[in-house]
Image (cartoon, rainbow, N blue to C red; front, top):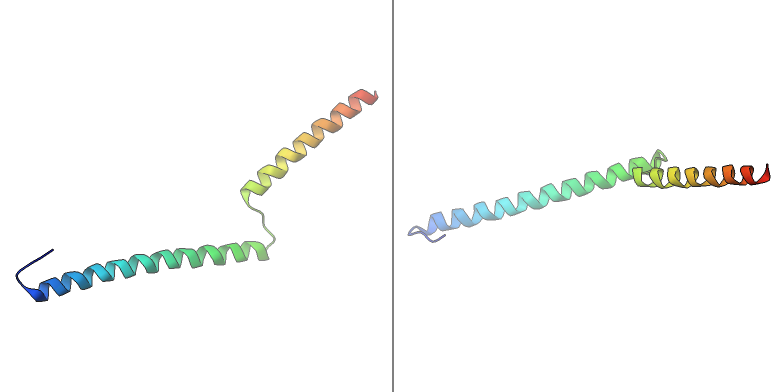
Length: 74
Protein backbone atom coordinates (compact mmCIF):
# COMPACT_ATOMS: atom_id res chain seq x y z
CA UNK A 1 0.00 0.00 0.00
CA UNK A 2 1.74 3.13 -1.18
CA UNK A 3 0.35 6.56 -0.38
CA UNK A 4 1.64 10.08 -0.74
CA UNK A 5 1.96 10.43 3.04
CA UNK A 6 4.93 8.63 4.68
CA UNK A 7 3.21 8.88 8.07
CA UNK A 8 0.25 6.87 6.79
CA UNK A 9 2.64 4.33 5.27
CA UNK A 10 4.32 3.85 8.64
CA UNK A 11 0.96 3.58 10.42
CA UNK A 12 -0.13 0.89 7.94
CA UNK A 13 3.10 -1.04 8.56
CA UNK A 14 2.62 -0.78 12.32
CA UNK A 15 -0.97 -1.96 12.06
CA UNK A 16 0.08 -4.91 9.92
CA UNK A 17 2.80 -5.84 12.42
CA UNK A 18 0.32 -5.56 15.30
CA UNK A 19 -2.06 -7.97 13.57
CA UNK A 20 0.79 -10.45 13.10
CA UNK A 21 1.76 -10.20 16.76
CA UNK A 22 -1.87 -10.67 17.84
CA UNK A 23 -2.21 -13.80 15.70
CA UNK A 24 1.02 -15.23 17.10
CA UNK A 25 -0.09 -14.49 20.65
CA UNK A 26 -3.42 -16.22 20.02
CA UNK A 27 -1.72 -19.33 18.67
CA UNK A 28 0.69 -19.37 21.60
CA UNK A 29 -2.19 -19.03 24.07
CA UNK A 30 -4.03 -21.93 22.41
CA UNK A 31 -0.90 -24.05 22.55
CA UNK A 32 -0.33 -23.24 26.23
CA UNK A 33 -3.96 -24.02 27.08
CA UNK A 34 -3.77 -27.35 25.26
CA UNK A 35 -0.54 -28.25 27.09
CA UNK A 36 -2.08 -27.35 30.46
CA UNK A 37 -5.22 -29.36 29.66
CA UNK A 38 -3.11 -32.37 28.69
CA UNK A 39 -1.18 -32.03 31.97
CA UNK A 40 -4.41 -31.94 33.99
CA UNK A 41 -5.75 -34.96 32.16
CA UNK A 42 -2.52 -36.85 32.88
CA UNK A 43 -2.65 -35.82 36.55
CA UNK A 44 -6.23 -37.09 36.79
CA UNK A 45 -5.20 -40.32 35.06
CA UNK A 46 -7.73 -39.78 32.27
CA UNK A 47 -7.45 -41.42 28.87
CA UNK A 48 -8.20 -40.03 25.43
CA UNK A 49 -11.26 -41.10 23.42
CA UNK A 50 -9.05 -42.93 20.88
CA UNK A 51 -7.43 -45.01 23.64
CA UNK A 52 -10.83 -45.83 25.11
CA UNK A 53 -12.25 -46.91 21.76
CA UNK A 54 -9.17 -49.09 21.07
CA UNK A 55 -9.51 -50.80 24.46
CA UNK A 56 -13.25 -51.24 23.94
CA UNK A 57 -12.64 -52.96 20.58
CA UNK A 58 -9.93 -55.16 22.10
CA UNK A 59 -12.22 -56.23 24.96
CA UNK A 60 -15.03 -57.04 22.50
CA UNK A 61 -12.59 -59.17 20.47
CA UNK A 62 -11.40 -60.98 23.60
CA UNK A 63 -14.99 -61.65 24.67
CA UNK A 64 -15.73 -63.16 21.26
CA UNK A 65 -12.66 -65.36 21.55
CA UNK A 66 -13.69 -66.51 25.05
CA UNK A 67 -17.21 -67.28 23.83
CA UNK A 68 -15.76 -69.29 20.93
CA UNK A 69 -13.49 -71.23 23.30
CA UNK A 70 -16.40 -71.94 25.65
CA UNK A 71 -18.47 -73.15 22.69
CA UNK A 72 -15.64 -75.44 21.53
CA UNK A 73 -15.16 -76.87 25.03
CA UNK A 74 -18.84 -77.75 25.41
